[in-house]
Image (tube, rainbow, N blue to C red; front, side, top):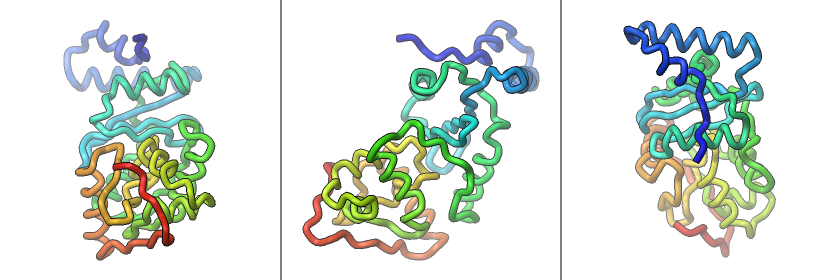
Length: 224
């Protein structure tokens, strides 16, 4: 398989800087040059959080990907290269605002995010589900898959809603962790059930007991 080539990695490997400070300066120099010369389409960085290390990626349009450590950095970077552009570069400064807001969220000081989002990794009904989720299920609340299907205008599309949530490219910021099965169990989550529970517990601690938006009578849940 052909992997995305990160110019920062290639240059760093060739240069073999003497110290961590040298490496950091070289990365910053490469990122600045790529930005100045319009060579950068996707910037990414890592962020340590209570749910593990997250990879954050953004385009000029906004935050395009939040990936959990278990998804594999190389695989995520390859996905970004294949689906958006091969001009992918480690450029942390481009994601400082996102990282700051996530730090505030995990510290219990932020309940909403106000960073621009780039939805290009979602399309059709999946994008519709996620855009409704981003604005329709508040901090400290949960909704069932059936309730979200109704919110998205397709009450019978419960399984499709489950798929949209399980493949959400911008988890945490687009809060698919707030969508649960009608019996209160977690359902699928891109970061795993432990991460989903951690996020719900964090919001419960900050906002009080999680309130559940009930599903319509006669609903179905997606497969676990």
